[in-house]
View 1: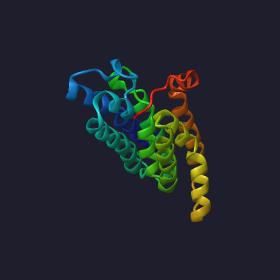
View 2: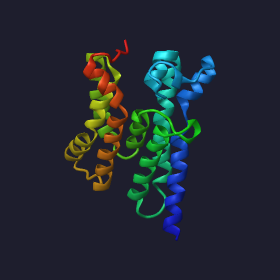
View 3: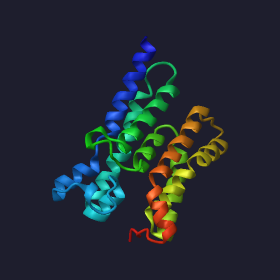
View 4: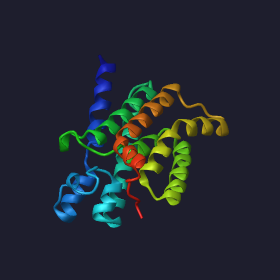
Length: 204
């Protein structure tokens, strides 16, 4: 029973933390608008940048990263099987961001929250993904391309960092990285369609 209680104690708060819609709140505070009705309609840092500008998007991005990190850092220490609770914290924090109960189960695409969540369990891999994301963003100036590439690279980055550092990331974290990365790509399906049509907008 205590194990089941621990699962609930990790999953529910992690979801609620992930579900805090920082970009929606920022839209209301800065311009009194619902960000879902402007730009791409996505509740994420990139759309915040397009609609509200850099000064608004940076806090949103940092908050989205922080909520993923905090959920995993705090709740993964419950119980003896830490990796199980880390998996739950990662999964539910990302699901909370993507499908927030506070905004009718809409949300973002999970890039920032996934970054923060895996920063708590695989920081070296996240650093590699960030470098790739930044290089691609500078090269093509399209956030969706950089984000999709960074997500796809997460599992290989974990494998590479383990090899270089002589560490061993739990196989369940690796499997979860593949699942969460696939979710990020899935949430970018409209962007992929626009990329195929040559209609995806550039960030700068």
